[in-house]
Image (cartoon, rainbow, N blue to C red):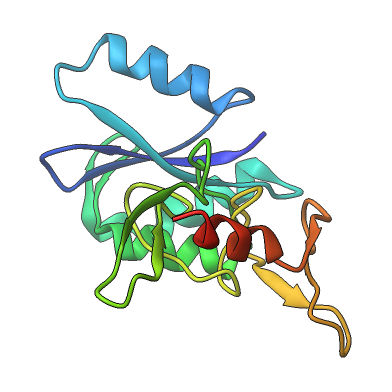
Length: 161
C-alpha cells in the first residue's frame, strides 16, 4: 500500500497515511473536510506500515492530531526525493503555457505545487528517480516507468508557435 501525503490548503496541516487507492482516499477525506485537500505525493515501499510509522515518528514534534502534522511541503518533498516517491502528474506536463521574452516555450510542468527539472522528477510517471541519460546518446530513461525519450517532440512543439 502506498504511504501518502495530503495537504489541507490554507494551513500547514499535512496528513501522512496509507491506502491501497490513494486518490480514492483523498475523496473520502475531502467529504468530511470543509477545506480543500491536495495530494502532494506518495511512497511505494516494501513495508508500508513501517514506513508510515517511521514518518510519524520523525515528525512527532509537529503532530497536530492523529495522522495530521504541521509540516511544510519542503519536508514532504525531501521525503519523496529520498525515497524515490511519486507526485500526482498533470495530464500533460508538456503543455505550452506561455513563452519567455526570447520566445522559448514554457511548459506546464509535472505538478501544481512545485517546479521540477527532468533529472529530478520523471514528467511521464511523476517518480522522483528522474530521467537519466542513456550512455552517450541523447536519450533519457526513467528507472520507474521505463519511458525512453530524446524530448525531440518538445522542439517540434516549440516550432509550432
